[in-house]
Image (cartoon, rainbow over all chains, first blue to last red; front, side):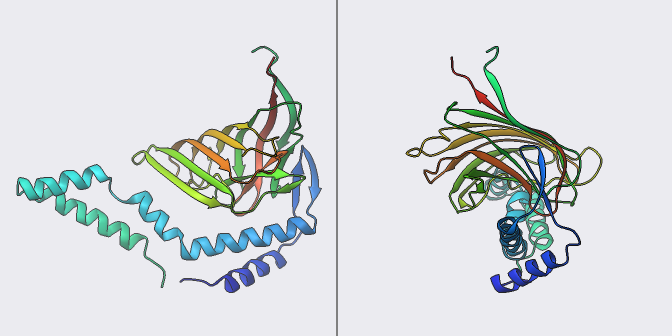
Length: 106
Length: 173
């Protein structure tokens, strides 16, 4: 389900508030506790991550998993020129599976 | 090349931290090499991301332009790019299974010039969360002319809980 920035920020803040112990960082090998600037950056980054997962990740997942352009060209050409739709049918099946596996959020 | 790499800073991470900063880039060297070896995270299916650091703070403006070639053992080679990103290192996610880790080497140029863009090319090998072997060659440019003095590594969610991080200055003569 698609999310607004306000929803994502609220979710990120709740996740931050639920952390049980102060977060730590390594600066040049020294372990330190988070300061206020780190906290604010963490909440902003988590907000953006939630927005990406909810609103944009489906597009990247499809791009990652679609059959290759070479497969498309070969399948289409064999269908149109040789009138053999075997590869085209397989391409369509694979294409539709990617779309159903990674649906666009409503 | 003997003696050309001068260790500036390092971190050997063996318990969870939210991010790892390597700083200390100065005008002594023009170019730097960063190595991150055996980086493991504590939250499944997340990316190991990076930002340059300026005056102790990560540069999180949407000023990173990136192009990369992904070598995917389970799929085709893929070229991807992104503009106006607020971080870099995304696209492939590692996990928490045995052997799932990322190793990355970065070459950073022009970081100390206030009139030129910082440029970086990097390469990595990893086992992702499935786990499939992945490789990457990438280039990134910081499209603002901020003087850079370090780099941050962090997970897209959760912590980094293992890894050896080093930054070297490249002595030119």
